[in-house]
Length: 195
Image (cartoon, rainbow, N blue to C red):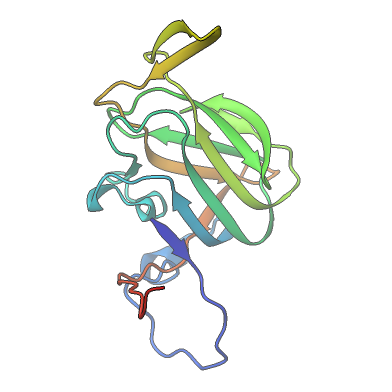
């Protein structure tokens, strides 16, 4: 799934959509704001576990990848403006396989940690943040040799998945940031011609 913000068309916008993350009860939230320009996940398990659920402040929802879609699943965040984020914490969705996380800051491999653990970042202004989920302890590794090459084949648990219930970002003072995701609009994209 891909969420992205559109550029300003110069036309005035009227009304406030019900799904606007800045409307309603959210206005009483005094946490510092960090705005996302876009976000995507490498895979998603149906409509019940969409990436947008990470940003809805509902403790009963979350994002998850497909069953068996093993290591190297991930979540990418693009910030609307360079953002100073000191740390991140990922709360696992119930039933999620426990996996290590590598955080990529502005495209460069950075700190590693685990789900549930607060991971300290470099503190540099971020334009993007990628969360790459590694292999769980329960992964099966089979080693063999073929044509003088040593191979290691790793399999993810067949019904295993990586899932997040909550994603938290913190500033340099340790204050939790309120993540404002782009507005998601359902629709279809269709080609008008083929080559």
